[in-house]
Every structure is written in structure tokens, then in C-alpha cells.
Image (cartoon, helix red, strand yellow):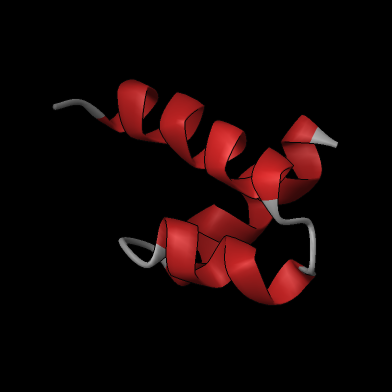
Length: 42
């Protein structure tokens, strides 16, 4: 699940959270977005 969201975020670029929303995940998307944001940096 994590890598799936990550792929979408990479495709969306800075629109990580926004791109993750259409997936229809919901809460998990926010968690993944936080992890990705941490990886990208502050």
C-alpha cells in the first residue's frame, strides 16, 4: 500500500497529498503523504 501511494505522489510531484486523494484511500493517504513529505524534507 505504501509503495502504491508513493508511486502516485512521484507522478504528481509536489501535488503528493492532492494526487493521493483521488486514489480513494482517505486516511492512509494522509499518513503516506506525511511519510513522503518527511522523505522529501521540511
